[in-house]
Image (cartoon, rainbow, N blue to C red; front, side, top):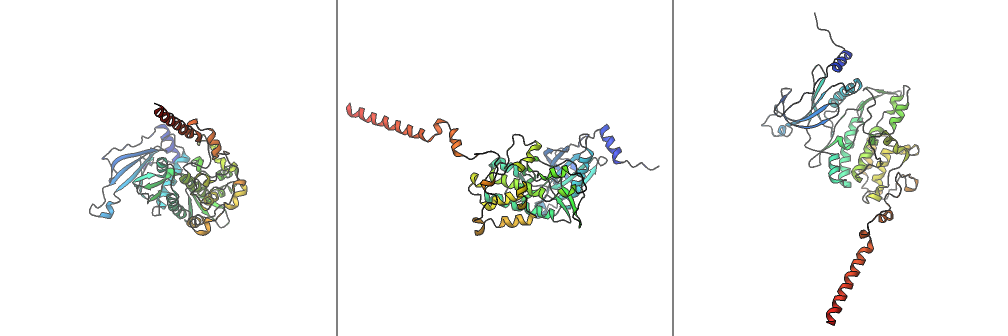
Length: 394
């Protein structure tokens, strides 16, 4: 008698009754008969562990092959806390990462294997010997205009290729944590397609979503307010709200953060969904007031990426190529004299007078005020004069 094939519902019931333990590899273990574990790199969401490993099949006499002998191995095991929608979304991610395998500035995926009755997934990926953009910002605060534009252009090239597929891939979780930099900062790689959307654009202007869409929106400060339009719409056109603009908005916030070192909209709790609504209420600060090296041409790029107010929608980009073109033109003589698309007088700032030096002076300690040094010098002069007079007299 042949063995009964279990349905997904039956597999889910088994998981809830008997949780599957996450495989723990230690140094020296061989995974999938090929990869030798060197160390554990990190632990993340979805009950996952990431390891650094060595590909033992690499020809040790091939110099170029040896440059890529290290890989990153991500092991994800389903447990009761992972819903059916989340698990299906993760399986979608596995398919997506294989589709983008040979794109520029995207971390490559070499192998995806299922074990433990398909409840554990092992993903073998390209190992990037460096740090995340978030780590770089935490270390330095912000980047120079030259560094930021270099990294931003690399990211744009990657996103352009994702959006160029017949079935467009919208990343939907772009943030500094998901951008990896090599130690020399010359290589930029995008990771984590866990909540990406794959969209087929049809001739009748209706979008067909090919991935499971649950409420896995991403990281609040980088989420386009367009998600509220999608959430409010119950008709068949709800999917039309998932578009490239989801990525454009994230790109604008990232570029701003690289140049300024902070997010354009402040919140005491960035885990609150209210953060997503801030761009609908407020405008970003004037960037040149914070960093004089930032030109209106650069600020306009960010403004066009994150424009969310009804009166600003007309400025939105329609493609990544438009952003790339504007970025390449920021050093042109014509862009030097460019004016802000939305001047200060038309903006509603979240925190008024945030860069008011008068206000800052009011909070200065007495020894930080300009007159304190003058008083010290005057006292020193008086002491010197008294000392001279005493010597003359006596």
